[in-house]
Amino acid sequence: MHITLIATVHAESGRANVAELRTILDRLAPDVIFAEIPSAFLAGYRNGSHGTLESAAVVLYRERRPVNVVPVDLDKPSEEFFSNSEDMFKKVARTSPDYRRLVDQNSLDTLKLGFPYLNSDRCAQAWEDIYNEALATVEWIGDPKLRQTYDLWNEANSDRETGMIESIESYCIRHVPAHSVLLVGAAHRKPIREKVRKRQVAGGLGVIWDFNVRWNR
Image (cartoon, rainbow, N blue to C red; front, side, top):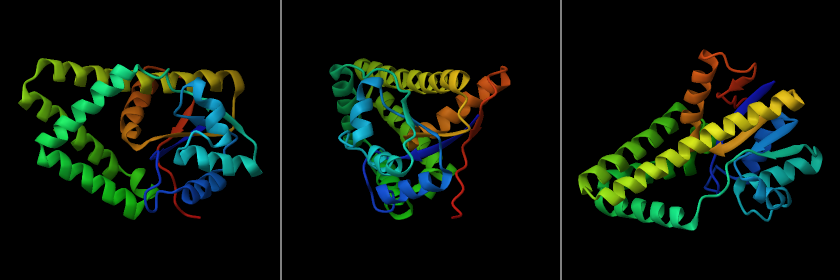
């Protein structure tokens, strides 16, 4: 049971585009695709109406190889959660020039370098720096409600990552795919890798995770 994590973005940006992701899928030829979506979004993801880079690439891949698509994300949080989180990051962006610089550089690197960047340690570090600066800015602002929003957002992401790992491992026990991929936002790559390693040390399941996509064609 071999799983390759492919870090991606949800909207096309330069070299991070549908054609490139489809090429990666064609080369890896997975027999199962795990998707960063709740089960309620599966139909739209499979027919392309979901509107993300990943879903568009998966539709094209499945035209030639109609593999199973498995949703592994938790249910969508409330609209209030999304609204509060969005407002928090907007306030951070207005307050911190360092945060804006880090976000802009990450966006530029994504546009210029595409998937090799998104799946690199450099990108993982960029996201860690972005979130560290966000937390430092929230603490500097000193608004308890804003800090509570950050903590809730951080906890929700951690729960999602754990849930995705557990859903994938559960599926692999029941169906034993030869080779599968997980398509997930690049910000989740490092946290998922760290959680997987902790589970392996604790005597986790016999699932082989690969966090280093090869780019030779």
